[in-house]
Length: 246
Ligand code: SAH
Image (cartoon, rainbow, N blue to C red; front, side, top):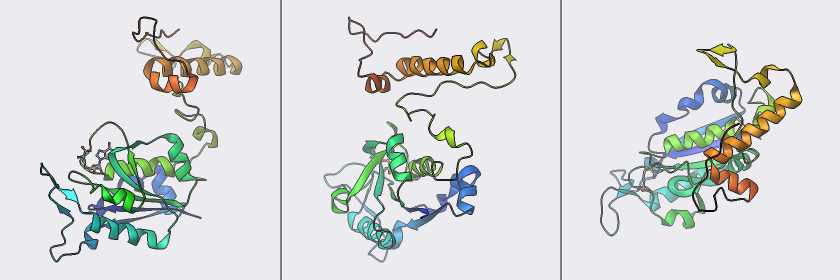
């Protein structure tokens, strides 16, 4: 079955956008995935095609109306009812590679893109919508977040990525950051590629890569390291310890 993405948005012209080029674009042409961008405004119920209203309780900005959103979600669910509905919101659960893998293994996704101040909260329970964030940043709309989510899924679909192994060795796949990469020239502005990578000794190379993956994860992402090892990255004084590269 083809992975099918339905994006509910006020800006359907933003899709497929960057997903229409390179790896994802070629896969789209080849029918390895398909997508529909649906205009939320088409589900407005008044003659002015209003999709938003002022926030209950006062305050700045506008909020997307739950009745309009529900109609758009119900429409998207008509065809493929078993696809999860995901709303892009900074209040959601941070997106992980694990969730991306699960989604990529399924029939596709329905993605709800917010604008303005976001969604009327009642949509999430009312239509079993999963809330997902792409990071502790605030975007102007959910479209870029949806593109990120879809890009991450599409590259994992069967036959989309060239080298089969590059999907499993990467950052986050084993709970760690990936080791760093180098390519020719061997010397650039006095900087050398680490000797071991040019040694041809595959055992040593694998060992070096594993070590760098661990050292870099520990220093750059203590949160990942702690989850991976169950050990807190802290000194006895409670201060965060510096991890030296060797
Ligand atoms: N008032 C909201 C932010 C609204 S930003 C708040 O403070 O939580 C407008 C829209 O952009 C959101 O509805 C959401 O769809 C999208 N968006 C912004 N930041 C995002 C993030 N980190 N992850 C996913 N979507 C995001």
